[in-house]
Length: 85
Length: 100
Image 1: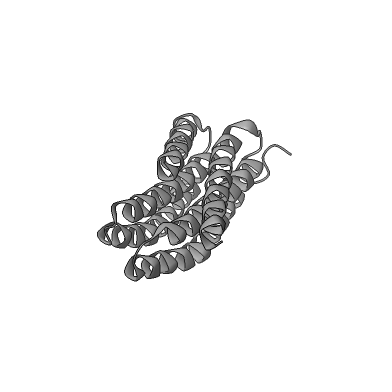
Image 2: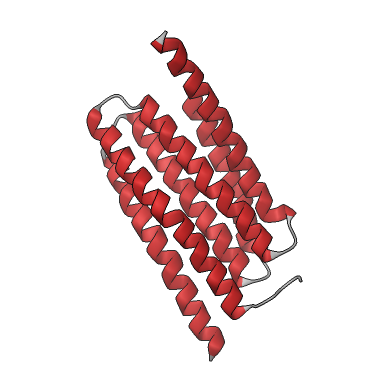
């Protein structure tokens, strides 16, 4: 019950953030919405792993955390270099 | 006694996490300035998963999943504000003073 409510809230939050990714006028808005989506999906993975009692989901969540951070870093660097010239 | 405290903690963490999730996602739409939007979304996207990790710590049944959740929580506490800082620096460098 508790996990169902939490996962529903996270899914609604992800949908709202996807709207911002589609609408956002500038790159920084899209990046902010992407980081929000990344952290919400991380919380979803952790909650689902605990609910299912499987440790595999938590390993996937740790790797997802690291790669979400590196992905935002790489995207911002690539877009910044492209805009400079 | 411990059972009652556990139940109260679980309900409180669920409510706080849901409120911060929805407000953090709504903050992406409500504000005009990109920096203010970044502040609102970073507050929501740091506090909500942190609360859910604490909830997962309470709900976990064995020690191996508790330890993994703890590692994820510690790394998330470092990586999420750093991500916000990177996005803010990118916005400042490439777009400058917008909306002032």
